[in-house]
Image: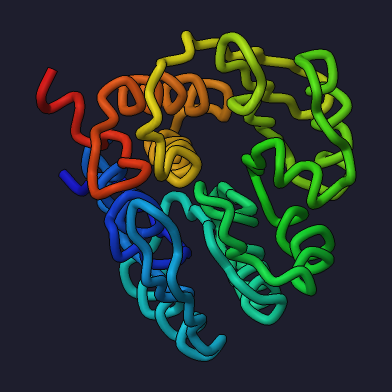
Length: 262
């Protein structure tokens, strides 16, 4: 039996909590075969990002074609793309691939370090989001991309409409930065799915966005519908946050392997 195949197109996190390292751990935990296209290398640990170096577009394109043309994919997930050139390169690649694409429009790290050039925002809006099956922005990324600032749950619909206007089929607005329960809104502009989970009193949440997007891609690769994949992914990430652990002097990672230890 061959496993469903999922490709992550993202940056490397040397500390192992986010980026392609988190993506591949998530894919392993969820029973799919993970593959990677590295877009950038970061020097990163629990306290921040000390440096970032993007790869040439040619290297990104070559990695992608190498995997997709030989092995094939059932879903693609994008993360840190760093520059307008890489955003446009990856948007072109996923647009030409017959597989669902989960776009995590990574703008800043958990520590507040910028991971996307300001000059790339327009490319994300006009090229990357229209290629997305599901876009998964957090509230900071919503504000960065659309100007909509979410202050309460009532603002989530307005945020979703603003992101959908750029062309993704579905959007998952992650309300994790709001007070109260962790509430997310998944919508395609007509159907609405509100996902709620208890908020864990836990500061070790490095890599949650990468992990959630990879979990959604894993579900889509298995043939789940978008609402089913997002619901399962939210459940997996909630468990991973609950088991988040200290690592280094700053923010620790979620526990990608929590189901193996429960």
